[in-house]
Image 1: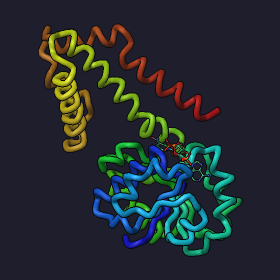
Image 2: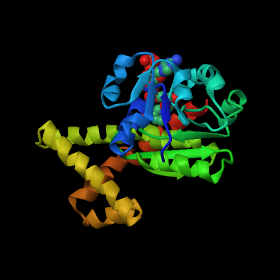
Image 3: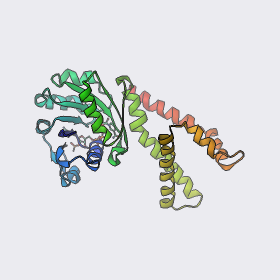
Image 4: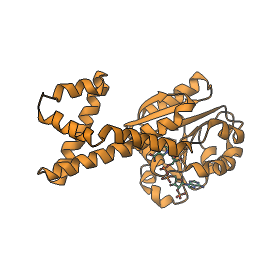
Amino acid sequence: MNRKIAIIGCGNLGCAIAQGLIDGGMPASHLIATRRNLQAIEALRAQGVTTMTDNVKAVEGADLVLLAVKPYNVERIVKEINPALHNDHLLISAATGIGINEIRQIASSTPAVFRAMPNTAADVKESLTCICHDGADEAYVNDVLALFDKIGRTIVIDEKLMEAATVLGACGIAYVLRFIRGMIQGGIEIGFDAGTASAIVSQTVKGAAELLIARGQHPEHEIDKVTTPRGCTITGLNEMEHNGFSSSLIRGIMASYQKIEK
Ligand SMILES: NC(=O)c1ccc[n+]([C@@H]2O[C@H](COP(=O)([O-])OP(=O)(O)OC[C@H]3O[C@@H](n4cnc5c(N)ncnc54)[C@H](OP(=O)(O)O)[C@@H]3O)[C@@H](O)[C@H]2O)c1
């Protein structure tokens, strides 16, 4: 994919995507990043990304426009860039909760509007990005898949599942990190210093995820392998369940989803 990409609103997510794309082999010169505080994206500029505050100029210099601003800024910014959008532009919005139809109402000349829900692991090319569209041409879909595949794995879903994707994939990063933090705290209680506990837990979590990804197994299949009858693993696991481990995760996911749906 040789298109020039403008990332409009290069904050946490935009920077993670830009860095992941560069690390994934995209020339930094293909990227334009905007925000008002340019000092905050100096690290991208130093790598060769064009940085600017002018969203319209950024769109004029790009083929693909990625909106990474907060949802409450989307309407204003789409109105601002709309005169610069032409019928070859691909528009992708990463904003939570803003439907393709809402964007289309303003950006009517753009042939393809996508929504994308990546996560901040884009920074290390390990994002899971859910994308959806409203019947875009296959060539456009392939372009968008090729873009997000550079920063991890990509799944095409129905737009009605985008809010669920936000919770499971984007908020999911925070849930998993809080789980990791809890394990580190437990590790310190049983004798490790924080650095060693963190190294053990992070690699263990990565290994557990890799087992599922590589083997395509259900988690319980792998759990059965490490739970000896009357052993320490099953004793610990059951104690966690008595304290609402799985239930608390499910309830947290439901609470995030209900909040997003409001
Ligand atoms: N963070 C995540 O994990 C994640 C995951 C998936 C989707 N999202 C979605 O991605 C979007 C961005 O999230 P985020 O966490 O990256 O937020 P963020 O860090 O606040 O980034 C948004 C950026 O937009 C910039 N901005 C505001 N007004 C602007 C304007 N008029 N022109 C150009 N830039 C402007 C802000 O920088 P200045 O103040 O310097 O202008 C800010 O850095 C949200 O819609 C969110 O729902 C986030």
